[in-house]
Image (cartoon, rainbow, N blue to C red):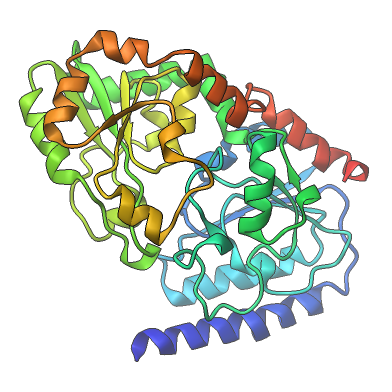
Amino acid sequence: MIFWLKQIIKMLFQQLILPAVYNVHAMKPVIPGTVILADAHHSEIPFSMLAIREELLTHPELQITEMYWNNNSDSPLKVFQNMTSFMKKYASAETVLICDNFLPAASCKKRSETQVIQLWHACGAFKKFGYDTDADIPSYYVGNVMANCNIATVSSEICVKPFASAMKLPEDCILPVGVSRTDMYFNNSFNQHCREQFFRQHPEAQDKKIVLWAPTFRGKPGSAQVCGLEDVLKAQERLRDTHYFIIKLHPHSQLHTQGTNCSIPSEELLPVADVVITDYSSILFDAMIYKLPIILFAPDLKEYVDNRGFYLDYFTLPGILVRDSEHIVQTLSDEAALDASIDQHYFEFFEQYMAACDGHSTQRIIDYITKPQNN
């Protein structure tokens, strides 16, 4: 009862109050060069926006506003205040950048002079998401959470159709210009900083093979679970003398399951990892930028296919499929097999799904901000 009451209040706020605030402030003209970076899942700038903010700051003609808050941890009053503040600025902004579902941007009919660019936070087109699954967007949500997006950027041409379907957007709004945040992985200073930070916090990992296990969540975000933790812990114990396991549960899963043993964000762990273990997480695509061996550990594959599904055939993924803790141990102990897994298929798959992630994605996206006539 309390849950539904909260949802009703939330929907009324988004469908009545926020549009009213927007319409009042939209009486003013759009301010040329104004750019808003906004996110409602982090209390500070998300990793997905770091590269583009850095580039935006090199353009003195732009007026940049950053607005970040966390719907899950902030009080309802603070969330409502932040949303209202966003709507006031949104009403006269020329460009708005988001990197996830961001309901305030979709809560009104925006003016045509404003462009909303969805950077999204994941590469490739792997598991179904958005409107292609019942798990992501509540059935009671009225409207389209991506309704006002002029552009959504993706990592390659093959991702256009899946993203258009998942976001309910025309295909010509999905641009295969690359994913901005991946530019960070090509930055030597970033990679060096990540390595120094990790070994400073985890000196016991020195001289061991670093294994990053980063599974995605099961179910719905509000009740997300994890699968395979017990097997990974068994493998960790078996290999404790030679391997150091980093366990990074998905943020949704962390709210319900203990297991994560490192506070450093997953993106900052890739530069130190020697091997990545995952199931259905798009971190697989990020790991390929570093040419890391990938182990696919998905003990509930059939159930996951039935409940969510994929945009591709799971068995065509580059990587070594494992079944249980014993198989994980065997695979991690066979360095020759891990090295051999980075083969022609690995590189062909990378080219197919990550072709535009070449270290220059951000600049191509910036062109749509500084030269809006290109849209």
